[in-house]
Amino acid sequence: MRIGQGYDVHRLVQDRELILGGVHVPFELGLLGHSDADVLTHAVMDALLGAAGLGDIGQHFPDDDPAYEGADSLILLKSVTDMITEAGWRVGNVDATVIAQRPKLAPYLPEMTENISRAMGVPVSAVNLKATTEEKLGFTGSGQGMAAQAVALLAEIDSGDRSG
Image 1 (cartoon, rainbow, N blue to C red):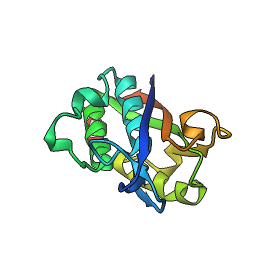
Image 2 (image 1 turned 180 degrees about the vertical axis):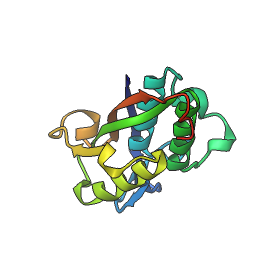
Image 3 (image 1 turned 90 degrees about the horizontal axis):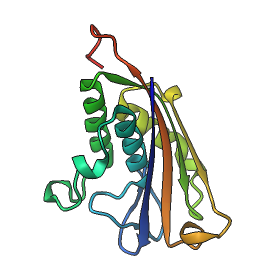
Image 4 (image 1 turned 30 degrees about the vertical axis):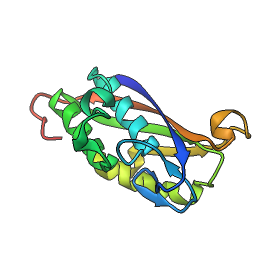
């Protein structure tokens, strides 16, 4: 077994959709980034890549590559899952936290969980998502941005079971 940790942060801006865990969350601001800026899914991808010893999302999906402009992060997560499977690992579980003062995210967590579990090809029970505020402290507390942290546990795939 191997464990990995992921962290991502994006600035909140006008004229962008807020997408978290593949869910379009109604809000007057969205996250700025080269792709869809899904801070939650990016943290999960980095946790998976880290656990497998495969670098980080910037190495695999550079923000200066036009191919990833506006990219759907759930599709990128599926690619990361394929990479870790090819490297001989399978997802055991993922636990992640979105850090945002607002909007309230609790109503959207079940759909985010379903989206992330589907992209990784694991049961919903293998994904735990949470949301918290920072009591109006720091850049997330002041509403300047959002952050996410994730940990992932990978288990080695038996040599006869590399299909995922």
